[in-house]
Length: 335
Image 1 (cartoon, rainbow, N blue to C red):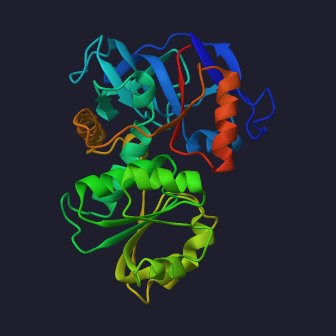
Image 2 (tube, rainbow, N blue to C red):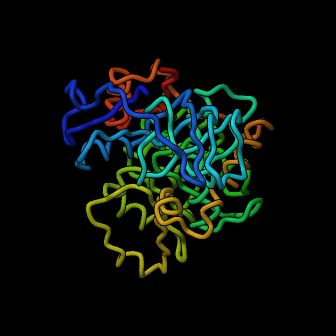
């Protein structure tokens, strides 16, 4: 089967050897596995981080977002059957989805939204899971709750931010403030439903004051947390909540003590990596997201379509992700 791999970590994405087209043997499903014919994938920051930082003892396939068709199932599978259209983000401990055929545990897979094509569907899973877990699991915001509370999302125009803005606006009563630094991305965040959009390249306290807010109750930082950390502590109200997904070199929690601010970290791979007892929760939330899309409550966050799934196009996608200037998700479709 066709696949795109890396064999040497740390190569700049402009190097033609950073991602390579190859052929690999067809995988065989384990008891809980689906064998999926991949129709579309999207690219996430985790793809670039692993390509740069994780040595590959053998050719490694990246890609943790996919939409496709189930071609075979393992002996213990109960949730899906051959022919089902699915979408999912996979597990970081297994080969990725940048291949014609891919194995994934059924407990982290959802039925593809009927109203979407494969490309639009592939833009959704990883960011939807991350945003959902942040909002409803880590921060414990109740659906239809959050009255009177204010949520600040730093980096709201990216993949996770694009989904988080929608979930917070449509499923809670939080006041949603998103940050974006360019006119194009600011417009995007506003279209997704943010009540207010401010610029994270400018001082945050002053901008919040301009829209009539002295502080916020929740901050979710999706990018460059180390650059914004002091301001985050400043703008959070006493007994507020702070959540993040990126990887600052250090994170000194002591400044949070004075205000009794709680700290929450989200990694959407935790459930699949440790096969936690509630691993099936990701199947359940993807099912819910699929329904919300088909009902028109939320929409795909596809930002750019980069053509077919091959090494050349994936290198272009990685290059854009590495700039930190992507709007929504970058998707590739078909082999």
